[in-house]
Length: 280
Ligand SMILES: C[S@@+](CC[C@H](N)C(=O)[O-])C[C@H]1O[C@@H](n2cnc3c(N)ncnc32)[C@H](O)[C@@H]1O
Image 1: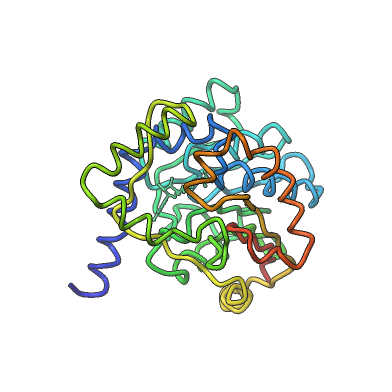
Image 2: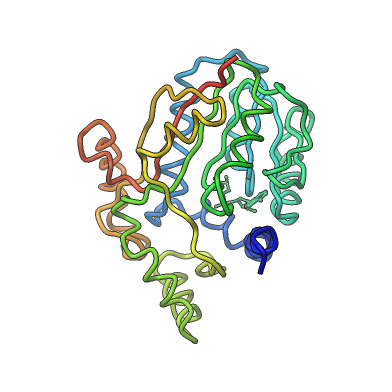
């Protein structure tokens, strides 16, 4: 297969996975004690956004917004903006929730490829993208787009999966195990029993990429983004999937572990968040 074809093939399978399992992904936000990355990442993102002290009405893009949980919390802070995602089911859910939460005038949602945004140059004060870059075939086209739509001086908050994150230690092994017939069904039943919810475990038809924290600064610089600061999040007592199964017992402790971001052990957090600014 030619490189361009395999890129498109990967992107299509990613979007198909998130489109067909959007309810399963969204449900993970309804089960906060499961030891998964979503809530620790979400809390850290909001903490960083709050530290910027942006004026109400600042214009934000959430690139790869999934079910839009972040955009609804940003709306509560008075920020307006756009959420884009390539999975139609995610965008349908965001649009429906926007009405439920009364934010449909301030937040618009669109189905779009994050590598080709239908948005004007220099139109956002802040661009956030959490847990998306790892599902793309590479960094370049995506970061070029995010940089293009940021106004000069505007900030990018980007979360990547940390290659050295302790909680993801079984990452590749789990992917292979889930391919064994019957494993996903059994894991889903176990998850429903222990963690609750109806939808069970997510299955992906590809292995997401992971980044080395140290490589991010030069990667951002190549796209006109000047590195300002970083944060790590998602420290769990047990690695995934044990953290999910034991989440009800360990979640209070896991939450305290988030303080490790202020220590040398911060490199063990599974979520690496960079703050950078678009240069003029
Ligand atoms: C792990 S979810 C993260 C969602 C959300 N940012 C959050 O923090 O919950 C990844 C999202 O990226 C979206 N995505 C992946 N590849 C994409 C692409 N090429 N264009 C647009 N969205 C994409 C998926 O549809 C999915 O909703």
